[in-house]
Image (cartoon, rainbow, N blue to C red):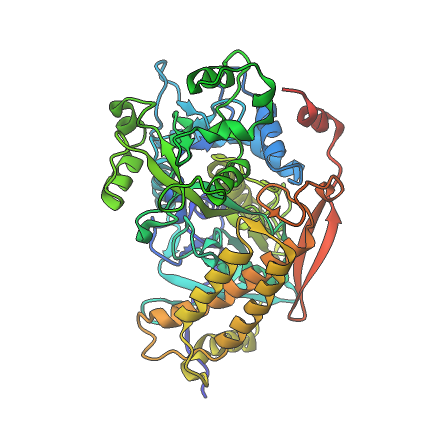
Length: 600
């Protein structure tokens, strides 16, 4: 068999992923003189960032002047259950306001306060309302702004291309290779630096808010190149996804609904979140919901509504309500804003949600409650990076956005993702360009690496079997939903590992037919390699953490373990085998420790 012909496109910095983190990295790298390109699996503008609806968290102090970076730092550390990389959180909280204002300078049109400042709304886990927003379409506005900025800088974009391998030379990044999804043509990108901005891996679960691209490609690429992963057991199930109709199950219902006054009710009509607040039972409260609400949201003590507790806590509460028989007819609970806010408020503040439920479920949320249930939404874990430079443990490899671990610890606060991609997308692009400027001898990947990668990609066309990639994918999603979902326990996770291994064997027997042009079976087969790797790493990491903490909830270890709170689970691939290590978290400096421990 002859060698696969390929196109060659050399660059200084190659950014894989065109969401907010990838675009911001490309803008920064190009601004610093690096010849830069962006590769995206789908079309430009289709990135998952557009699904981020509620806002970007930053301590601007426009609505609450008391808000500061230190309060944002404390909220993020506490929300992450103290296993966050404290340096990442410090940089993030300090730089978030500047990044949001920078977006405004580039043309982003945020909602305004009566005084003309950027408006900021409440979100779960934040002491103050600090989410800069554009109705419930904030991610879309951020992508629009960043795209126009990047295009003006003449960054090259390769759309509908999938990167399958990172190339290395003597342990450092030397390039990447992949294929065009429309034609099947083979591509090679010689480069000195790669920025991974491929997002999350929610499609590994049956019900997710993520789109079809989110199959964990970046995790597979990073592991194969020799990079470390961190906190992979920490997967966030957003409390509110649609449950009906079946075709819409898992689609996100923004936290902005609760931030703007929506409340959660069970089948009895009871606002049940109060019952999951121990503080509530110690207070002298009347039986009525109105009086309980007044007590809990007393602005003098700045208590947030119970629906705005951190996402992991709200998710567990909803799960328990449904599990104990107080769920809605379709297996969820009710999210009610219709009785809390006037119709014109809802349509102005939540236009996308109003349209989404009207079109998909035939429900007018200005009149009726929504049915919701937790949906796989975000991965706190990912590639281990240096806090200041966003550099991975492989020279020349950088990561930013959801693909990078460390910032969010055990649980991400809503709104922190959009400022994460701005802060660390910029840092990844900046330091990738600086790294490139230090390289005196260009790295050079061997032709054998390229040929081996091409052979692996084309192998399913001649595989000795008749397995369907879609059957294997469905089997994997069912396994992860059942055994490595909202709640986990050892026996179920061991069963999951056995079934993942069996599915990997089935993948070797997947045979695809047809040509390389627009072949969905071939694309799905490629995605499965990353998905199975993600599933194994998440499950093995979850087995290693024998406690409940943040997004990781175990029925056999219900309590949070103080000792385990000072460690991270680190994964790496050595000689084709995934190995885990338990590492202590670096000591937080005294001045930051005092901020975290300050009583509020």
